[in-house]
Length: 285
Image (tube, rainbow, N blue to C red; front, side, top):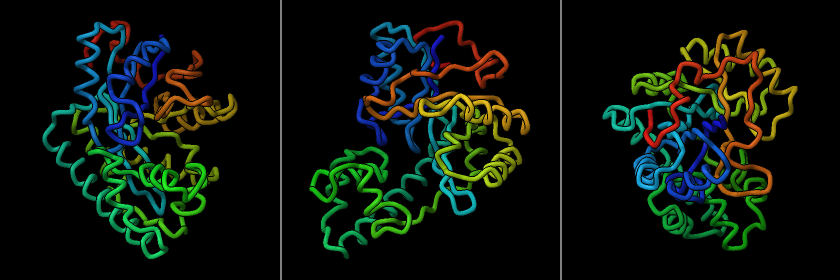
């Protein structure tokens, strides 16, 4: 069974619609897919409807990816099997969306001071109601010729210490774990190697995540080496986490794909060990 528990649609910073995403997942042989847009569950209803109407052989896991603050770092926590209709959870996500808008306004203001005007209206139009991210800014700056690639935008304008960078004011990591679990879900530390922490700081992050009653760590991503996967699983065992897998898919590329290389070895206890994944159907569970 091919399982992918981290993906994005155009409801945040992905390029595919929820319908396009689930169709691509089926095309790539994925059996169970979590849609985990940034601080929003807006894409889940369309995805579920498409799976049901088209009778797709795909099991949808209701998910979200919450941006959080820990120490001086932005840490992403994926929520799996959350109840997307939970009123308090939706209210909590709304506070995150307001933070995103406030950050976008300040980013636009700073870019304007460096002779790049009118960024916010263009970014809002590009996002078209989606959760605002720096990716939307990067796409716009490429579109207007300020850089020739997304990576160069972050190096020149949006990375830490650059002219358009604004420090985040996200929810505390431990509080985000509480949000997810109160909505019936399990909290997963997303892509731990992307934060570029040394071993000491990574262990500190995992210890604090354990103290916050986090559930699992995403130990498998497409770009990781086998040794990195083994090292992450050893840390999971040390802190008693289960393991999750996710492509963090945003758009079709030559280096990343839904469900690609997301395998676990037999000695690893997956986050889904108690889920009814054997019953692949069109309904979320």
